[in-house]
Picture 1 (cartoon, rainbow, N blue to C red):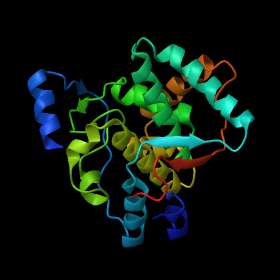
Picture 2: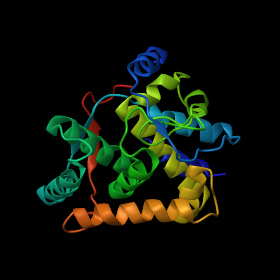
Picture 3: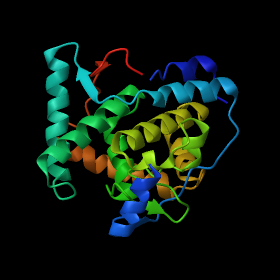
Picture 4: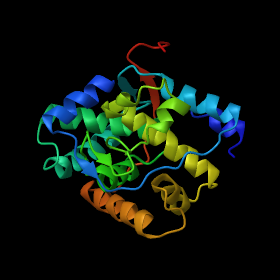
Length: 229
């Protein structure tokens, strides 16, 4: 169980599913699935707080150097993502949100890109055989455990990325920073090498796409409406 102090530092609808099914846009994914585990009340509260804020992300950088580093990351990743997301505005919004949610949760944004690639192939409406949903293949039980119970929200881009990043951060803390075990737990295959190796391999490809590798961006993050919850 993660310490309360570690969890707190995160501070970090059904109709949509029906329409997607009717339109034939829900694609089956073959990733694994997180397993539901009992959470201490303090941990559940901290995780709930970490996913509660839903306003659009607006990154604010402490200096121009960090902003330029982010822009280089976005350009490099964007070039590789064009085949998956050819629309410039869609691609820009997706990458900005990945960076924001990953950084907010203390994760490497390029690791998150690798995980999304393996989990869903960047398909917004992907569903696994176990019922995991969206870009980061989040299991619906999380929406009941730490969300508002509306599993359809997991098809919303920012909601899905936020849930996924908070969950991976949670698993990393449980595993005391061991990324291999945390990735296995995320996929429901803890201790087996296939999934962690796939994600880490994908991460490396994204790092290579970003000419100077993955920047460790340190930024002050605010929302479009400061203080809004």
